[in-house]
Image (tube, rainbow, N blue to C red; front, side, top):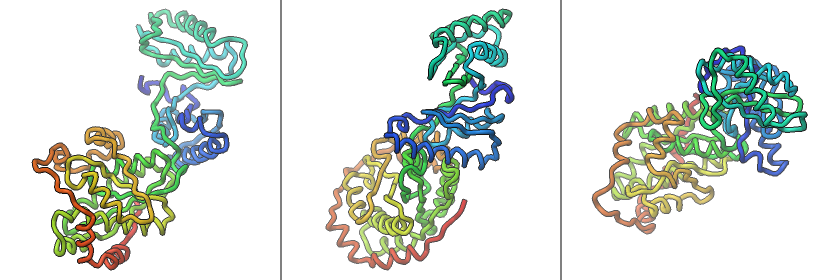
Length: 398
């Protein structure tokens, strides 16, 4: 059921913490909850949302605000939250629960609707959860007899949910699924290679979901692909909508000269491998400077030559000090596309790349050996190329 309730009906947003947070040891759970509260407050401040209080209970946060309906969808995009619900708060007295349930139903139940009542309790009360469901259901049928409501416990049009927690109770009808994962900032930051394709923004989002703040690093190829940087910046801007409260900056490095030197001095089949190896060397230095703990790339492996498993191993060999993470390694193209749509970066991707991904090569792949790569790199001054890349580095704030 969508948000069709009057804005003034509800006064609280129930924020349910991700399941992973609840199973952590007490000290770790407390740390994660503090981080999540900080992230929630950053969102509230960013959108100028007024609120009276933000209270923490085990597995829950309760936000007291009059802007419940506009706030709930925004909080659903905070990593570490499993779901949110605009709710009406009352006391745990059964009479108060009945009154507020009738009030809620009056604004949400349409004529002829089928409904079910669900109740969950924490604490000791003079009634059971079944007592609450039975009494509330009876009250609703009596109060709105002219609407010809029907009880349907298996597949109702509307579910009226009641959450009783010690001395408080909350009545709600909507559950908005959250993004889940771990609170952003609960894990170390990582350098993410971000370009203008479909995959790399999804890889960024995946590590963000695991609690890692990202440092997007884009290698600009102006003489080869002028639109790539614009797409990368648009993707970064979309990703930063999920990282409110954290820095919104993109590191941009000139890569055109490197590609030109590779094309002039090395075999064509090694271009992609050599280019990626230089990127990893630069990314390591950025990670060291920014105190990050890894490099993330949108690579997966498939039939395409540049994504063959042995080629990925050759690329990784250049990263001597930091691990290279590939969060998309187990996903196929359709799954990556679906995630890109969910995140909001899919429409920014070039359609020709989408079509290309759905084709397979007609020729068998030729295995590239490390010796070939090392011989090709001997024709290049790698140290100077990396140094020049670092000197070209600039930061774009979005």
